[in-house]
Length: 187
Image (tube, rainbow, N blue to C red; front, top):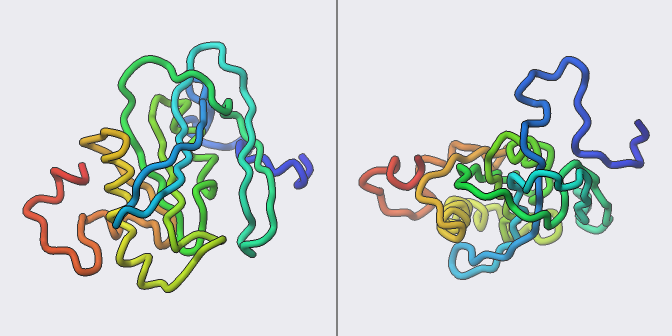
């Protein structure tokens, strides 16, 4: 495979069974949601697609330098009709800086195994717009909650990379008041 192909879905021959494609074709679409403090968020959403959805789609994104545009290619079908059913939500939270495509491979894999995977661009924390680190500390967990609320999920899981890591999943952000029971918001 040539590096110029920019694939997000290759698997080595010794990959574990759960890393392989699941029984569902994967779909992907880009949606807009309101984030913390009313900030708009762009979210990449992977989901189980209807049977027969063709494999293959693209993600237009940016490299870490914040200026170079690239196209990533994966197995998920862009804007495929979703399969009927209720699918558990997993929120994929990128690092600082990062973007919603950092875990595209995982989003595709989760969708193929029957999950809805939502990966937001956290405002002020992306390659294109990263600001002061304190902004990320202040808003990250509220952004995650806003994704869950915007998608109507009472229960969800979080997978994070670096700053997006689950250490923030305890339900408390910088300056938050203590919550009575995190399990009701984070489980």
